[in-house]
Picture 1: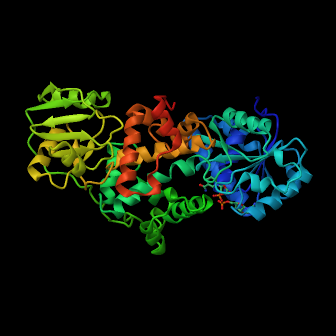
Picture 2: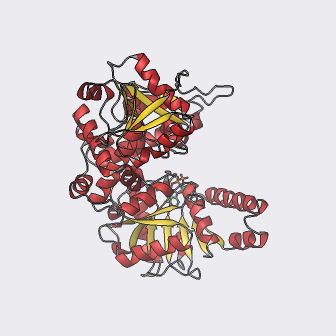
Picture 3: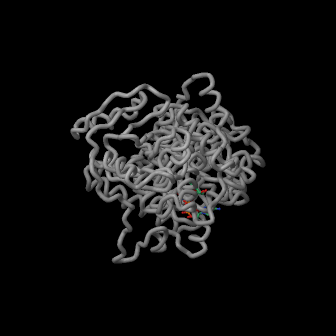
Length: 505
Ligand code: NAI
């Protein structure tokens, strides 16, 4: 399907945070862009925001002045909806209110040509519902940009129940021509990103609520081992706890109180206290002047082992064995077993598969320490460990000393199933699988969306594949049996892939 040619005019309604960004994207791609807002001041502010962005691009050498002037020349402020008549694509980015959106699109149908595409940038309202009362509901599609629109790469193309496939395909090709990474998604609550991302926050909040680890430790492990740019609490503080809490509540209620999306009492308390995050000066962290950033819990230094035995054949752990050899530790190849990890004297140090170390200590009749997942064990600068409740501090020190000898900082956390990174990645992959199973998108769609909409270092579907689907499956199974909660049930898609020995991506 071909994109809308730049010779076709585009219109944007709403000149706020998102509208102004979308105007900039479309004008930069060469379209004449009409912009309308009920508040003329908002248009002035929006254009000033674009001018500032473009001026910075020129000063940084990313664009020449001629281009800046021609982009600004293509932006046409409008004082009434009728002025948008020449547009072939209208993108609405106004207040998140179904009645107001319906009224605007109803008026637009009488103003625009019959073949114009009506798009909404809504984050949480059903495209089917916005379109329902239109004369031509099949012309309506969602084009969900991410904030800030000129920088964030992702656009989700949302298909309402009656959206014409050709309309969605043109919207897709057009966003792609504007330099975006684009995915198709069925109109379901949260679409892809705002649904699949829920466990990133909710599992971190659960670990905190259960005393598994403190805030800076969870954030540091997610950054330093998981490879994410920000930890969940840092990100919630940036987004705003009020906004994050309201998105969670909206997705939870839209799925008829699905337990996987249940909001956290901790976050509710933050919002109740006005601790919205960066914008209010206090959230999970203190942003006031002179405030110090709390440190993650880091284990004191322990002696390095002289030799270790490698257990299992998990290629994920190859970098650790290599680092051990480089650190002068003798690495003995042990028997191939179901388990993945190392043995130091009689202490088992195993990659978490969700089973708590206390349970493994009983089942395996050896003191057991579990360690967390890392995106890349060579690059990871921190690893979380948990010991079985029956395991001694001396045995724990053997595992701590081992990882420290490999150049890692160690955070010893409570024996919570799946630790931090493994638990969150397994739940993200489970959520992605469920979205695919319910026909919202494809596995590739999940990965493109999460990498480009929220900057994940790897798509959760590919990540699950790389870890091993059986390993992810057993992590979820362990969480489910430990908590006995519906929230941790495995997605049928993942279950079927494991049974059939098939790949997800
Ligand atoms: P905003 O509050 O910054 O801007 C909304 C603008 O719409 C305001 O300038 C307001 O004057 C104008 N407006 C309100 N009613 C109008 C009407 N009837 N006709 C014309 N203009 C009208 O809001 P923001 O954050 O830009 O959000 C806009 C839409 O984008 C919402 O649907 C939101 O869900 C969605 N969205 C927001 C994201 C964000 O991070 N802020 C991300 C992705 C989507």
